[in-house]
Image 1 (cartoon, rainbow, N blue to C red):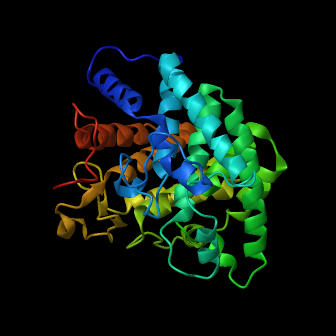
Image 2: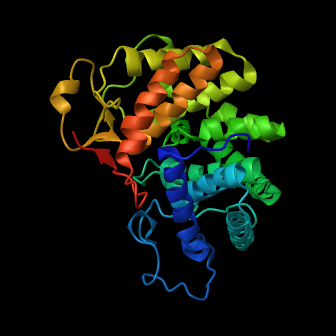
Length: 349
């Protein structure tokens, strides 16, 4: 609320994003939450007149898009004080609460709880923790930026579900299940909620998520990234950065610093700033052999900008602002269609 954009390319893109957020129908954004809760809604006919692709009811990632929308809408409300968008957020959160109650009062998500049972058994399932994390982040942002307190109540009840699940997993024969299902963002999410509320249960949760294997590798100076899935690894670093921010524990700063050294300093990037092939980290010295159509995944550009943002705030070193500027222009702006707002998944080189 303290910064507004002057006329120019960024102001134009803000308008495109704003119009896109407004164009989406809340009931369609909620379609998979209704579906999971067994709620029939007028105007929503399953497999007709609904969002498809990764939002299709037969996709295992269904529902994560609503979390992205909530985050974007909440930040836009903070910037523009827009009453229409704020009303949409309020309606959506009321409906998520309705779904949570229909699911028994704890589970508020767009996918079945049994997906987490599959993690426990090491059965393949496509990224349930990633999917749920987007809702957690969206609700958190709705509270932080749009002042929606009901979002915090939903999160508190959902956290109770995760307290029970993580306790069960950590006492099981497969405690590593807590690190499955593309869970990287969960560490930062619980730490952020602890910072916002001071509630001990969020500390318990972030402590349960705070020991992914890559942290030890980074602390020991090993290459924890080559052939690693970028969008699984970078969110862990957001979590380490958040833990340093709220605890002051130098171990977590060292993890973030060593990650940056491995990801950026010791590893070449394309001239545009990106470093990935497909969705994976390229080995040092091999970037030139990976030039093609599947370079620089859009969301990894965003996630790396967030790492640089943390490091700039911790150190005041302008090299991180240089990195942000390069990737903002040659990633975010370059990969987004200036008229429709739609991004390229990959930047073709």
